[in-house]
Image (cartoon, rainbow, N blue to C red; front, side, top):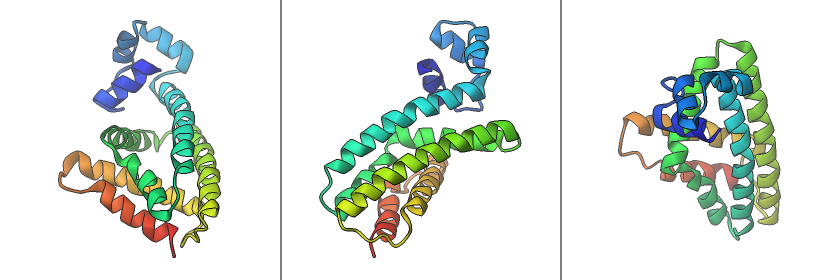
Length: 177
């Protein structure tokens, strides 16, 4: 899975090959197919594994916030260079698998599970800070993902956009009334 993550980040989902991923890991392509069923299955495994790490990091960072501005800063901080690259790769996956109902349903299930966990964590901290969001927290999480992917794609071909500032402004509008 580590090799898959590295190759996906380096080459993108579409350009990455099972052969390249297997070579990076020191295995044969047959091993990748045996354990993951192919590139899409490996992607799902990597995303599922990363989700837990992301959630724990988010939980820890949000627990240190004491204001709406700090909460927005934590959520906007997901717009670092690696996260932006990962978001662009995720967009490739979505585009490449949209016409594959079985794979897209699996991706949707993983995303829904992660979104639900993020919603629970965010709702806890919104309540703790006494915030009244302009949108339901579930919609804020969807907005965060959609704007994040959009900004990542924009940043991949158009320089000069301060993604963190844009995301911060959008989140501040959504999380405070």
